[in-house]
Length: 245
Length: 348
Image 1 (tube, rainbow over the protein chains, first blue to last red):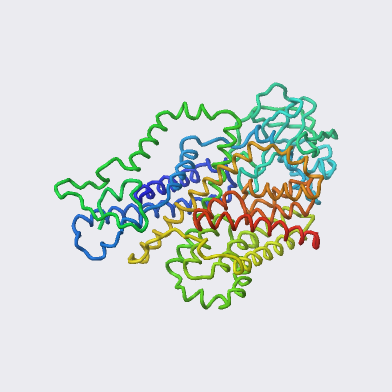
Image 2: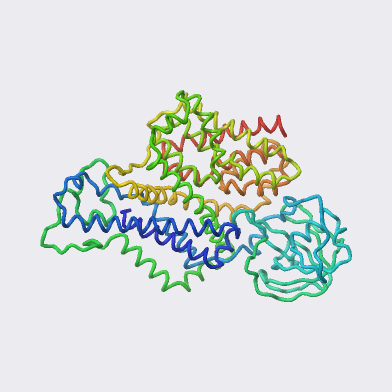
């Protein structure tokens, strides 16, 4: 891999990272807090690429004129060569710019067990004001399981998530949580009773209002508890800007 | 002096052999992008084809399994790039701006004492493991004894404040996990450093040749950045592909059948840490969610992960050479498992 090719690959990689982090595309893969670091890293890559290409161009132009200059005589053509494995850096560029795969959805949710146990806290403040109170799937699930729904009480809650099929094909309200990037993305799953949707295609985003249900199921993957919500109404919605929690 | 085609075509690199003595005939017009079709032109053609056939290409990977693979692969790369760039820039600073005499003063003269100092110094590097590989390579290049540089390589991703804080957040009911993780990781790093002093051979480490001499400082800095990104980054891609494959192919329920056996659970999570290649800042949350497993086996997961995983093995092959990686990684794996089980028995 010669130096010019390395410069081009660095430019592509830096440009792809910059483009993904300046639009919302990066939210499909990592936490929002990484954005400034992604922009900085992309910028450094672009500068490194420009410096490489400028240096390369200058050396090639200089060769024409200064063929007799002394310090050009000890094999400078070696210094730019890199390993062929560097070509692989084109793959994430293609992934980011051309494919831009979607955020993790129902397939990943079906692979992994509900990750509620990693999020247990001991103290639950009252629900936010409003009727219905807007809370996250994760918050509902942990209040339902670890607080037995006490802090939800008789309030009506509103949650958004996508539907994913459970072991018996029943639909579950699901949200993926990330701690770092999509490689560690794990689902939080809620069962739905009452006026629950049926026959929605997997990965459809919905907004659900409902009340606490004492019903509890079990995740077929890891045997964790899956709390239920008693659905009153639901509507289809567009996927939110940040699909993870 | 060299000819122009050697600059722009693949396969002209013969280390040690004096190439580039032939000059292009003077009557041939000299073009900036070379006289033949070079690798950059091929790359351009491939990218143009991909853009043109974008529809069929994305159609071909629309199955949920492949799509999830692509998402995980891209996200491992996106997550790693800032840390890689940070580590590469720091290592270029070490390589170009910090004089070798600094390390002679900063580290104890005796290698056996330099190992623990370098391990503890890992506390100051706030990042995950992708950044520490080029930094360790740069330290060795600057004359730091390999044992100390390797101890730093192992300790830095595991014991820095960000990672320990993440561990504390992930295990709110088991604060002893933070102590156990820090202690076990430090011990493994020091043991590996001392083992290297006893058994390691300098010729196992083959740092890729770099030709920074004779360049201005700034040019040398950017050349070092480019060099390290291409080397470590290329191997990072290999590791990210492996991690994405494991993530998609191995369903969690297979794993859980092993959770009840104390020996198998330790081995299962140790191997899982290697193949999943999760960033050390995130692995605590994954460990916390594997709640069917014993705390000790999850400690093994947290100690092994930042020190040995597919992307690290791949990157170490690129930065230190294959002979090094095939010895160092298995040894580290065994030491890490043993130490983590021992520390787990005492603390957890």
